[in-house]
Image (cartoon, rainbow, N blue to C red; front, side, top):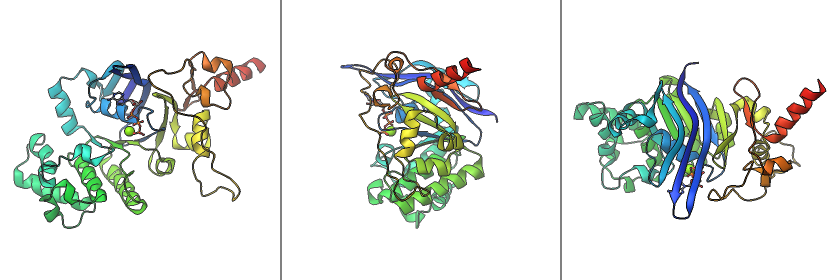
Length: 331
Ligand SMILES: Nc1ncnc2c1ncn2[C@@H]1O[C@H](COP(=O)(O)OP(=O)(O)OP(=O)(O)O)[C@@H](O)[C@H]1O
Ligand SMILES: [Mg+2]
């Protein structure tokens, strides 16, 4: 499959008064045309910072300190602000974690939905207005004519989320980044919105980066998964690799903390013990070491190598490295 996006050893830090927060500490992955990549990991693991970087909206004191973001063969980190604006309007868009960070309270929904079409697609006002109404219908908003003239605060949370999805899709992006697009919604609306994103993705052969805490959603929607912990991708692979053949202890922990329909009656959910890493003072070695039930001495001293398990399945863990070395010695 052709690559649309390649992220190579991307590093992003925040330079705060207290020191450097290494929010993204060197991540790499690629996404093909029409592919959906899920990004999972607990709060603070760097998912949103990474997304903001890809779309060129990283705010100060955040800075890219290394790596490349290659989109259709060009490193977008080298783009001028004008090129970046053009890129955002035409090629990539994002559904934000919080609708209010994206919807402007003082403009009507219609104004905000048509803006991109008027600026980037140079559409006539009437054409843009009709297209926006069509988009609102597509995301399941009743009475779109009326909604176009309303302000964000006049809409319910679920409706605002749908408006954001409409905004994300209206310019026909090649890549959609959806950052927890359904977190604030109740379960039935969540399911409808996921269904919608999937349907549109199929129809338009769009690529999607889907950021979520919810592994059930990943299993349902994604082709590939990157599991993030403390600013790093600790394991990545296809949905089948990650769900049926997980190899990193953190991924295993995530799986055990997730409810499953095929669980036996007596099986309990097991939370991952311990606290997330303090990104201002990250530990030596493996970020997950202190919480890992298989932790060895080396894990607390040296960063683990990334082991290639074949077909894009990769995992960064000393346990796996030593197991493989053991097997090699036996041969
Ligand atoms: N403006 C900022 N200044 C300093 N540190 C920041 C800033 N924004 C984010 N960070 C830090 O970057 C790290 C990653 O944050 P990020 O928002 O990407 O997490 P996340 O994985 O999206 O979490 P969540 O699941 O809660 O949305 C965190 O340690 C956070 O404290
Ligand atoms: Mg986030």
